[in-house]
Amino acid sequence: MNIQIEHRRASPAEFRKLRAETNWGIPTLDTAKAALSASLCGVIATSGKQTIGMVRAVGDGQLNIYIQDVIITQSLRKQGIGKMLVKAILSDLSNTCPSSCKIGLFAAEGQREFYERLGFIARPDIGFGPGMHAMLSNLVDPNLATAQDAA
Ligand SMILES: CC(C)(COP(=O)(O)OP(=O)(O)OC[C@H]1O[C@@H](n2cnc3c(N)ncnc32)[C@H](O)[C@@H]1OP(=O)(O)O)[C@@H](O)C(=O)NCCC(=O)NCCS
Image (cartoon, rainbow, N blue to C red; front, side, top):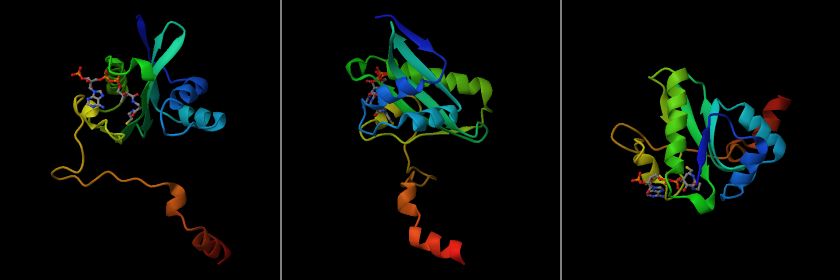
């Protein structure tokens, strides 16, 4: 198979198609467009006319960058394409961002080793607490916001 690496962000349609092959949900077209245009950069893999993989990076480009949406089409996983994409985006970032930048990510369940092989270390580890996340809706108390707004 002839796999090409393209140093560009996925289009909203490519992004939505690949997200459909995960269990993370498919963003609406508007959300996909906004998320991609706010991303720092991206890399995709194609085979013929098909987009078979993507990765994007978000962050401030100076201190903290996060790798997001590393997705390879289901039938082509475990063939080295994911590794190729992550290495390509890290190489692009190394050309535009200070080498002191911290690169973070949240590994999906079962994918820790994939990232460890690329040089990432899992948290918690000596000197590091756990990575944490929550949905914004679960962090904001709507009743409190209303009371504060009215005051
Ligand atoms: C995770 C994912 C991107 C990996 O891409 P891939 O193309 O299948 O992985 P690669 O073939 O490039 O694997 C690179 C190396 O990691 C290893 N590896 C890949 N997935 C692994 C896993 N889940 N556990 C252990 N090792 C794994 C491979 O064996 C390979 O090892 P090698 O370098 O010694 O040959 C892909 O499986 C995928 O799209 N999964 C669904 C979406 C997802 O969970 N993305 C990650 C979000 S955090």
